[in-house]
Length: 465
Image 1: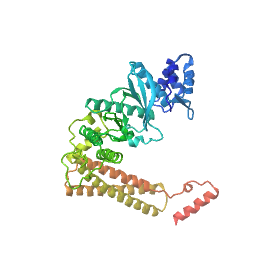
Image 2: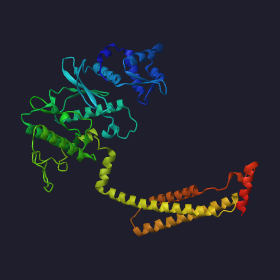
Image 3: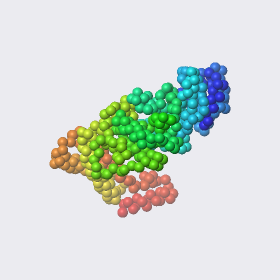
Image 4: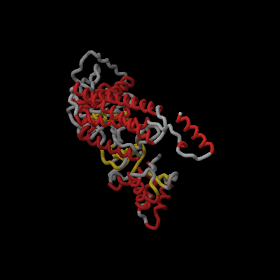
């Protein structure tokens, strides 16, 4: 959607109040009811509905009446809320032309009051070209339900945090100015994307500089994950600047080595094609003790010294959550191998349970075939027999498991053993009840007359035979 800021100057205070009311309602509503918008906005004399009509005309809201009468924010309305907040803060006073577009964002020029030109990045997740955000990015973490506007806000916050931290540690990144909702304002890089550069005076030096940035990021605990010619800016003096940081992950991520090798491969491939650089492949038999950025050897993820910093911990980068940190510590201590052994024993116990359930079902089928009359007394006796058989089977499983535990002598806890036995007993009883089928007819107890009574009489005779 095209950003037309001319509409912004004609919006009143009530318009932004209603837009904010819709935004607040979208925290727990996909489509905010009109009654709730009116209640949150609290405009006098029913002015909310008139404002909603005006906002709908400018495409700042979307009307949905499929289930109930409600509205939701569009990206244009979300843009206006973010821009209005930035203007009120005094971050910029004017919005200029669009200077960049990507699969996840749009970039515009903005001007400060003193004439300084900056860049405004508006994250727009959910485009048709990039909808696999849940699998490609980790913005959601443990959340299941999500909204595209909310995901864009998370991406902007993450990029702003990474940009601030990398700038403090001396990395060549743009200067992060401010952030609000899905909008990030940064300094404008006076350069060109590397993909648009056809010639370089010193391509070897630029190549070594870029590889050095990848290694420095890994030494500080981060991996860019999208380090290619589209996210590298270079100016007239051949100074390199990195951009685009929402997808960065920690070196503790389970796929960290794959992401690191992919970034290195992108740089090697681009410089080999564009600037005709030749690289000698390293032999697999040679052990690399240090990371070399020469043309004769590629950087290795395993040989990087990751003690220069802990930015992944400070910024809570993807892959360094508390759960995965506990798993790494357990793996170092060797607890995962013990858990694997316990899982193997649990699988054997499940096998015994399935065999026990099958035997109880077969016994029940044989009991049902031997029934002579479907009376209540026989049913009670059969139930008592089934309960006795299941209790005997559970006692056998208890004795077998206890004897196996004593022979193995692995020191399993008594409480875990008791829990597993109780689960086996409950499953056996449940299987016995599920396997029980009543073959008696409903008409055998009721004489309704007619053909049904005749059938019941015939069935009684057959049962007596």
